[in-house]
Amino acid sequence: MSILLILEQVLNGLQFGVMLFLMAAGLTLVFGVMGLINLAHGALYMVGAFAAAAVAGLTGSFLLALVASLAAAAAAGAIVEVAVIRRLYDRDHLDQVLATFALILIFSEGTRWIFGSFPLFLDVPDYLSGPVSLPGGIEYPLYRLTIIAIGLVVAAALFWLIARTRIGIQIRAGEADREMIAALGVDISKLYTLVFALGAALAGLAGALVGAIQSVQVGMGEPVLILAFVVIVIGGIGSIKGALVGAVLVGLTDTLGKVFLPQFFGLFLEPASATSVGASLASMLIYILMALVLLVRPSGLYGGST
Amino acid sequence: MLTRETTLNIALAATLLAVPLLALAMDEIFIITLATKVAILALAGVGLNIALGIGGLVSLGHAAFFGIGGYAMGILAAHAQNYEPIMEVPFLIEGTNQMPIIWLIAIVASALAALVIGALSLRTSGVYFIMITLAFGQMLYYFAISWSAYGGEDGQSIWVRNEFPGLNTLDPIQFFLIAYVILCLVLVFSARLARSPFGLALAAARQTEERVMTVGLTPFHLRLVAFVISGAITGLAGALYADLNRFVSPTMLSWHTSGEIMVFVIIGGVGRLFGPLVGAAVFILLEHILGGFSEYWQIFLGLLLLLMVLFARGGLIGAIVGREVAHD
Image 1 (cartoon, chains in turn blue, brown):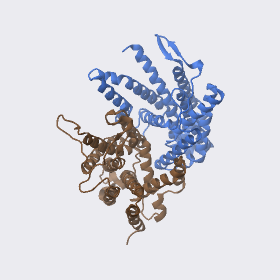
Image 2 (image 1 turned 30 degrees about the vertical axis):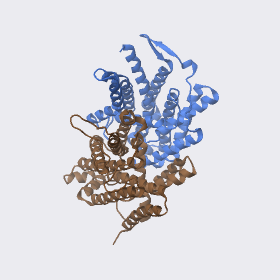
Image 3 (image 1 turned 45 degrees about the vertical axis):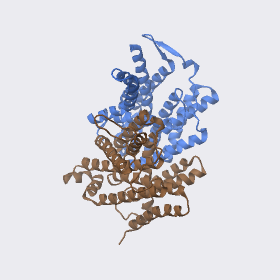
Image 4 (image 1 turned 90 degrees about the vertical axis):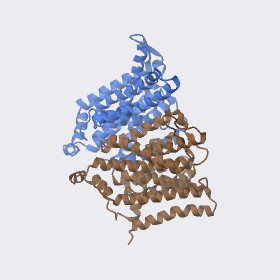
């Protein structure tokens, strides 16, 4: 096993982690600020991917497709927030789970109605396809490298937004004490819609970016949603920093586990059973990681007490 | 005097028995199968209702126990039909096609899984608990997909339905009666559990945790026991469901299944003894009425569910009998 292969897999894990961060950031913001658990976040990821695929099909421009994914997911998020979600802030988690589960059914079947059951394809544009040579002689797909870059830029922008801007101050204040900031004259319901739409836009962007690697299909958001839950449970709910650390941890663990566990078991098992044991264990690895984190820190790596 | 809810419950139990008997008289075998499905899914919901309704534990991972029950049946029956022992060293374990043994193993296996998952997830509460139970359910789902020995993603088919001593399980009405009797027994058990000192303490832990601790009880232990009982019942339902379909696949473990089991409980009314039966019946009816009318029937299910959550709290039983039973 060469060092190049390991480095390549580390980059793959990082790319996966960065995507998870885009999903997890929205979830953790919405939970931190509004106290809402949103199962329909994966549906917004799907909306972004479908919008991108549709616009790319019409115009042929990947950049426009990305813009469309952001806009469509943000709009869907804002509409859903105004129509449904804002009635759920004062409800218990059970109602939130059910209502957002209902939203998933509506979004998934609605998308199937409009676009049909067959997957759509979103092509990587020419200027981003093909490999690039990295220092050390690694050949790595330019598109995946671009995803890592976009993810890191978004993460930096989000930290800046939360830490340095007026909106960020209001968001943090909303997390700490919502009555108080309402009393200080901040339009809290507008702020909530904004935060929800922001989270939705990030999920939509993730959907579009991943849609160009995988296929764009109904239900694509749900596996990612559950991974994003694992990420924020590990990172600590409400913490953007926790979401970033958790996402990279989960991305690396999952990717490296899938590649190296079968090889590891191959050292002392016969090839067929090594592959199957390794693959089974690799699929469970991130959940084991989550269980371990919970044993040590029940409220996640960066979570406060809940 | 009977309360209105008890009267309604008796009527519901009688209806569930009467419909397939009528269908038998009219030779409508399909309706018997639907009623069996309702009874089994209601059983899964009754299991969840112990954790959710009495204990207030919002578990979004009950598909794990449903699926473990299903796989217990699938694995035992698969080995029985191929005449291959499950293991030979250190001692011989063979498959079986006897339902009582399969049920026992399904119950034990899902109870053990609930013990491990519960012990880990109950260290947390609220939204963490929801996400963690969801994640553990998903872990088993992916495990089942990659476990090629029992069909992996394609699932495991069983050619002949398992046997119950003295009955012909391939006769739909006899299999229905098996499911119906089990459902009734578990309902009685669940009703007694809710009124037992344990059930009262569990409900108290949901309402005011501090008070329960003050009298010297540990909420964690109460909840863990409730979670294990809940998982075991849902596991039993899983074994029956797999037997109904003569098929088990990772779909039984998927989180949509968890969501659906929860939907049964909610449609009927959280904490209502017969809530899961009403919910499962309504769900199956909707599936067949709306499903015949549009391929995209789940949109309407989603809308209905959304309206129920937003405007009709307390579920259908709550809407019919009102809030005569104090819960929260």
